[in-house]
Structures are given as C-alpha cells and as structure tokens.
Image 1 (cartoon, rainbow, N blue to C red):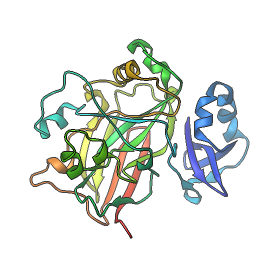
Image 2: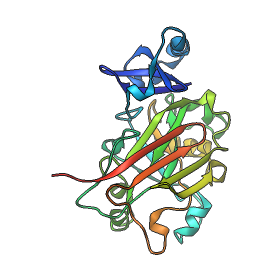
Image 3: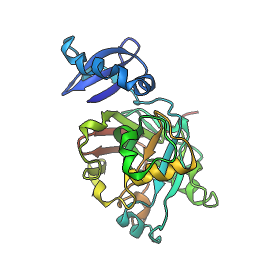
Image 4: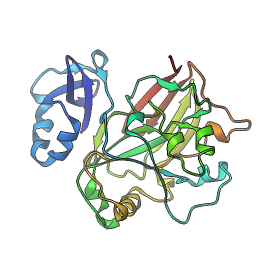
Length: 279
C-alpha cells in the first residue's frame, strides 16, 4: 500500500493507486503509523469508498513533516567508498539530519548563501513502525513500517570543515526531501534488491542497487537500537552509491535551476529544482 500526505483543502492522508489518491479520513501520518494495527483495514478499504482524486490535482507533502529522529549511514556502498578515497568501514558510521531539513518530494531545494557546494545523494529510506530497543537482526524487519525515496542533500564544504562531525553539512533547510509517499513494508518483498538512480538535468549520475549495501537495513536497525530507543516515524537513510558530484573530477556541485530526480524501484521518485536562498 502506498500512503501519501497531501494538500487538498487541508492536510489529508490518502492511499495511492495508480495516478489516483483516495482520502482515508486521517490527517496525520505519524498517528496512522502508531495506530497501524487498528487503522490498516480502514486504509485498505479506502479505494473502494469513493472515486478518488487525480494526483495531478493535489499537492504531495513530505510523508512525515517532523520525524522524531532522522538517522543516515555514511559510506555504505563499496563503490561510493572507492570514489571518496576512503577505507571500507568495519563498523557503521552514523550522522543525523535536522528535522527542519525535511522537504516535500517536489519542493525547491535551497542553496543557502552560507554554503555553495551542494551535492545530491539518492537513498532508500526506512520508516520505523514501532518502538524497540536492542532489536535482534533477525527481528528487525518487524519494526519497519515502510520505505520511501530520499535525497541526502549535502553541503560539502560544511561537511569537510566541521571537524569530522557531518551533521551540520547534512542539515541545511530543505536538504532532506522525502516521498513521494510511504510504501508499506508488506508491499516491498525484498528491500535489498531495488535499483536506485539519480539524474541531474536528465543526466544519470547515480545508478546502483540496494543489494550492494555493506550493512543491510536489518543490521542498521539492530545497531541503532543498541544505543537508543527507535520510535514510530523515525527515519533511516540507508546509504548512497557512487556518482556524487563531489567525487567527479573536477567536482561538480548543484547550481540554481538544476533539476535533481531521485528514484528507487517500486517506491516512486522525487524531484527538486535548485534555487538561491532569498533574503
């Protein structure tokens, strides 16, 4: 099931079937995730209760406007490690992104006046579905509500010049576009067999498959939950492949009017136009 947050005379939660979204009577994605066992049937039946609205007639929002926690793993594709001239990690490398970096799936991506080396990173994003701590790897799938597409937009100069702490360079406003909806885990038979691509102005920059993750999603969840309690609505950016602009020779960063499109097989695509910060 594809569950979207959209604007249509107020914020609504709907079920997407093809090019149509069907209203559900819910307005809060986090509430849907928390109450999933109780509301699942209601959402499943939504397409049979009305004619629906064309997606072209509504404005899709970020599925979760203010996730509780946003984690992202670094250096988790072998080809990306090679292009960045870094050693293959023996343990997971994590950073956070600020809540205020969340952006809608088709909203502009801002180039801030304080940072000009803006880069793209297509990723599959896992959405936590229930509370857990010290989750065993073999049970980690039980804690995933679903998946969506993400772009871990990065301000490379701030990433490089923050003493090894990446979070500032990863947390500029609008630098975490997600969407276009959440595909529930039961509709993703194997999250470790999905192609993912990123294009800039129609040119393919990244193209890989989640089977190349060094630490898979279940290992990521197990590791994070050793340190803290995972909660419904937390987001996990699971890693990006090679092809980022920072690794090109010479580096090529995003500029105003560039169009970045990120897609993950079966999960849809997101697209943003780069704009200069105003004011």
